[in-house]
Length: 165
Image 1 (cartoon, rainbow, N blue to C red):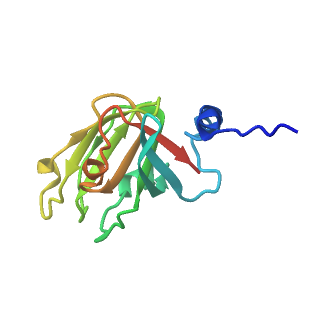
Image 2: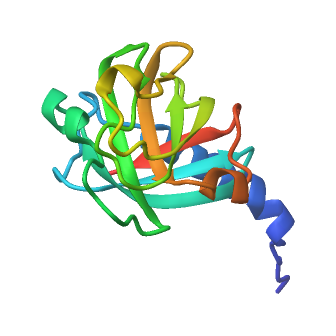
Image 3: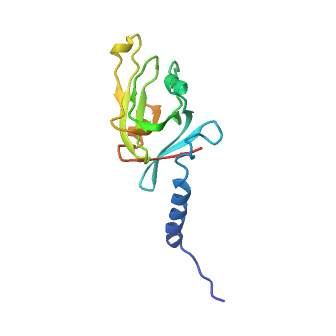
């Protein structure tokens, strides 16, 4: 009897293909809503390398997007907020009543990071003087995470985002 040994190098391309097929359906559901009505795991990748994964609250309604992370004094380093924009559009963020430093990651409808803003709190600043952070193009999603995480994990413009609900 001849024993055939499959090496990891033979299996890896097939495993990678299967994972990419499964993950391609994980960006969003058909209506961009979480299947469980709760959190989502957002993963940033460069090629097939995972750069960063965070658990995000999902802000999909106008009211949820307006409130965002306002009035919070802490954000865990493995947490964030995912803003869903349906239909996709250009957006501008500001730090009104936001107490924590954030990275604001703008992601296009293909799941590609198109820009990252480092945003600082601006306490006691009148609305008309608050700094604005424009997306620089149409986005389907924006992710807010603890400031510096994107730099620390090499998430840059061109990185890919995957969402799983």
